[in-house]
Figure 1 (cartoon, helix red, strand yellow):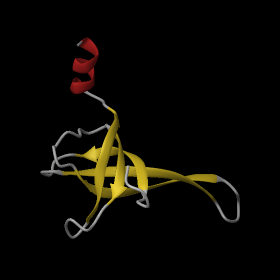
Figure 2: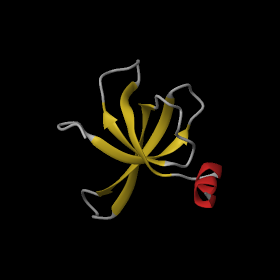
Figure 3: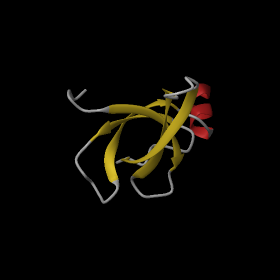
Length: 92
């Protein structure tokens, strides 16, 4: 693992682009006045060099150099697979 780089964990919400996935990262924040815990989310475009990620996968993304106008992150690893690929891995 590369030191000094930010890392986030989120789920893939779109894999329609070539070598790019959209990852939704959720975080919990406390409301400044009322103290209620709120769920906040942000979407990041991340580089997926091998086109391995599918919608629903949980991935770790790492900060990288700018790869395009909006793409500043890269998929480091797939933490949890979903869908047909996950079922096929269980069978084998």
